[in-house]
Image (tube, rainbow, N blue to C red; front, top):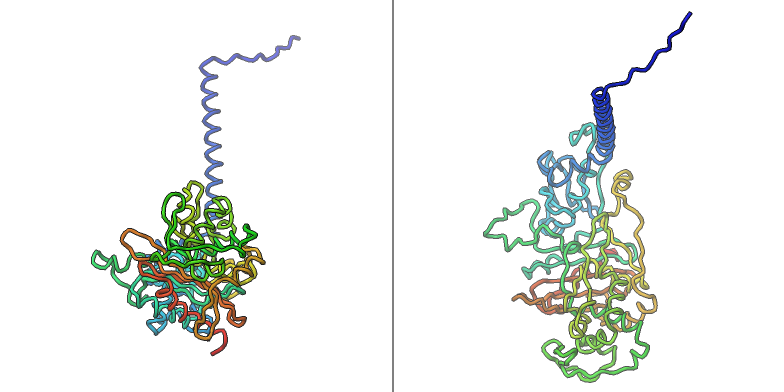
Length: 475
């Protein structure tokens, strides 16, 4: 018996080509299927995790009237004063117009145009958004989503009453440098959230920058408040600083061009302490030129000038100090807060808080308390501490800073008058801190297009700091 073995039949060239095409297409189909499944899975995870944030972005305010805030929890100040609440399915604000207007940039309004405000930043958490119910969760299923802020309405109103009287853009902030609690914050221009303006070509100049919280989101030329940075650089790098004397004739040639004191005032012979007290441009310009760009930049960097702070998940604007390419004359001017220097009001308050607090800054916060789940979702954590100034340097600088009395509060502070040019008036500044143990606050105020810091910024802070002291002292 014979047995025949099966023999393989060679495939034709055409059949091989067809099979290769089928294999290639099958591979592509499998690849796209896997990509689709992976993408769909990723989207589902993102939907579960971030749906509330997506739905409650300011550009989605149309999903419900009042910016979707009809079911939002109430917002209180530190003393239990209602700043915003829902009443009869409508978002309403404090009955006092001054409180509403002063705290607009802190609390926000129905438009959600102020992106850094509490109602804009935490809208989804205040409304109790649900993946299943959206913004229409039955009231019986809702948990409390109220928030209590660190701010004192009276402090913000005290600052607002003075700042708004100038009719100029500006900012003022007061915070506890021990706990980080922001006690008062005001930004102008502002408006009443119960009666928002219709901004058009006629009034747009009046409301320019109205949706920007200048405390957090703006930078300004600092003028003489920057001398605090130059002073730290000099204290740490010039061993004979306090044995030196300088002569100010009102102006001096540095790097081939003139540096002048304000109005060309001649201060005569001075030591470092008197130079700080009289805020002599000549002395601080000479110091910056002597210290050089590397030391000046390293000091500014360490003190947080180019740093952005995270305040309740909101980033402050970064300041700016860069003199790598500066001429000697520009370096000299940078030491007195001119050239291209820029700082942020909150940033300067934090810096002053660090000087008062032995060199360590405390990250500010606007949120005092709320329901546990709400605070967990916000990510509220212990305030962060960052050393901005050497402790010995901070103690020395405190001793040479000018002293003031704001009502019943003793403070160390520095004024500034920054020339911005372009036909605008000066930026009027004042920054500093209280030296009273029962009122551990640091502060900053800037008034744009105005004049001298002592004339414009100081009255705002006198009102705000005294109101803060009354609050902390229980008056």
